[in-house]
Image 1 (tube, rainbow, N blue to C red):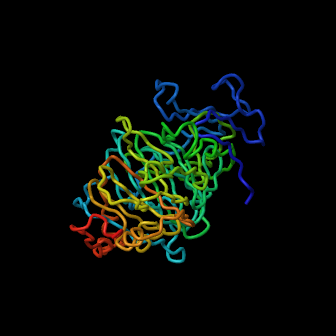
Image 2: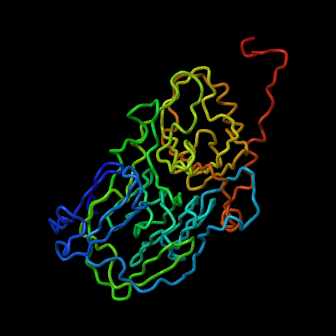
Image 3: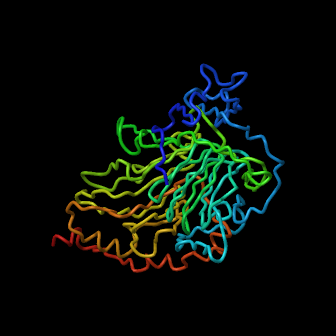
Length: 444
C-alpha cells in the first residue's frame, strides 16, 4: 500500500487538492459561476451558519458530481443498531463483557455497517443531546457501499485489525492504538484486511474538542499538531445503479442507490474534516509527589455539554507511564462517581484488574455504582515497595465517560452472550484489615 499523506493540526483551516488536478481550488471565492475543471461546489456545514467564528465549522468540496445525485432513500434493516434505551430494565450492577466475538469470514461476510452493535447509550437523537457506545465486528470490506451519520460524530477506536478509510476528504489508515473521528454528515467506506473489532463513541449534536488545559499551561496531553487530516484524493468511477449510500438518520438506517463513487472530491478547503490521532503521542501528566491523580488528567478529547466543566462525553486513555508517588496507594482508588464510565482495552492488561478484563471486551460502571481495583490488586499494591516503576507498558486501556446515565441495550445484556456473570466475584475476597487498637500496626 502506498504511504498516505496527511495535513497536521487539530481544527485548522486547511486546503487540499488532488495533485492530478493542480489549481482545482477556486481563487478568491468559494462558489464561482464555473469552478476549475468544471467541478461542482458543495458546502458541508458542521455548525449553524450563525455560530460564533470560534465554533463555526464548514468545508467546501469541489466534486465531479454533487452528493445530491442519488435515488430516493429507503428504509433498510438496522441490524443491532438502536437508540431505544428502554429495551430492557435498568441494571445498576457493575457490568463487564468478555471479548466480543467476531464472525468468521468463512461462515458469513460482515462489513463495518452490518457489524455495528449498540451496547449502551443515553439521551435523544432528535434533540441533539446524548451519546451511544457501539461495538463493530466485521470481516470484509464495504466495497461499493458507503455510510454517513446524520445523528452525530463517530469516534472510532480499532482494537483488532487496521482500517483503510475512504472519505470525501481523502484516505486514512487507522491501526490499533490509533483513533479517528468521522464527523457528522461525512461519507466514508472502510476496507478491512482480517477479522476486525473495535469500539465507537457516538455523540449527538456536539463535536469533539481538545480539553482546556487550565493550570497545566500551553502544552501537554494531546498536542494539536499530532492530529492528522487526509489530503484530497478522488476517484472518477462509474457504478451504474450499483453504489449504495447508507444513512443513519434518527437512529434508523436508510439506503440510496447512485451511479458513481461518492469519493469524487477533487479539492476541498475548510475546518470541518475527518481526522486521526496516534495514542502513543499523548503527553502524560501524573502525580510526582503523592496521591493518585483523577483520570480526567488523561483526557484526549471532550464533547462538552451546556454546563461548564461537564461533558456529554470524554475520551480518556491510560497509557504507559511512570508511577513515582510516595506514601500512596498507586492504582485507581475505590470510587463512586456521578458519571457513567465505559472502559475498553485495546491491548495488554489494565493495572487494576489483570484478570477478566481483556482486549476486545469492556466494562460499564453506572452513576454511583461503586468500583475499584480487584482484591488481588489491592493486596499487592498495599504492600508494594514504593520505588519508581513503569505502569502499563504494552497496554492501552481507555474510557468513554459521560455525565448522562447510560442504559444498556438488549444486545449488550443478552444477545451478545458476552456479559461476564462473575464480574462481582473479583471483589468478594476483599477482607477487613481494621485494627481498632493500633493506628499504624505496620510500624509496630
